[in-house]
Length: 217
Ligand SMILES: C[S@@+](CC[C@H](N)C(=O)[O-])C[C@H]1O[C@@H](n2cnc3c(N)ncnc32)[C@H](O)[C@@H]1O
Figure 1 (tube, rainbow, N blue to C red):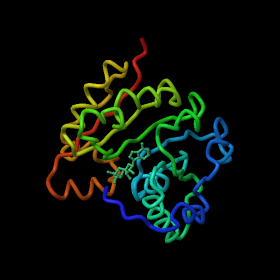
Figure 2 (figure 1 turned 45 degrees about the vertical axis):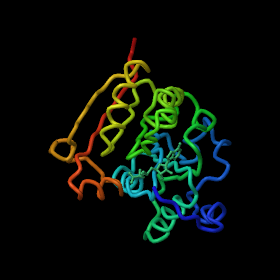
Figure 3 (figure 1 turned 90 degrees about the horizontal axis):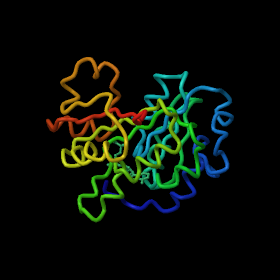
Figure 4 (figure 1 turned 45 degrees about the horizontal axis):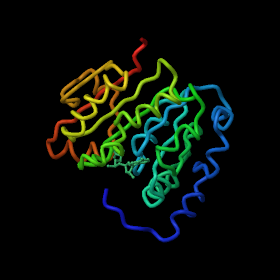
């Protein structure tokens, strides 16, 4: 994603009431932040927020937390939220890097994780920075319920092949795999498009998706 710095974005994001500043203080207490016991789903690398906002509207009985490491990008999501007639009560946003996850969520506190169009980091030496790498899978395992899933979508074949290869060594198995999500009518019934998905599927690129779970043994 091409980034243009927006002066003051580090502070401006907190003018939006659903952006949580002292997020590490809520470790193990996220349900009290939402004032309910509903399951918590997180999107890592939410970008401008279309996917997580639409999820929050569609599933009021679930809680959603969008995570984005750049305040400049998160700020754009806050503009979208400011233009809404009603801010969903089941949505919070955090400006942080995914590497901090175990400092922010307690073991078993998260019911599901979404990774959408994650940065590919094409150089081999940067493989550890890829969000579907075994490095990050081990962090997801620390916060996700045992039955919880990670759902990943991308149009980048190289990144998807890499993500698939990471599963067995990291002890995960697939529940669903598609090399052309948009041709799968059943899966598309529930699909919520991200900003990148709209852009790249409009160009005719196939969208790859997996849903994975931790191995039981
Ligand atoms: C290519 S964009 C995709 C945005 C959105 N998910 C979509 O599909 O339209 C990837 C986003 O992930 C964010 N990101 C990448 N690595 C991250 C990390 N380690 N922690 C948090 N956010 C990250 C980037 O800043 C960027 O906004």
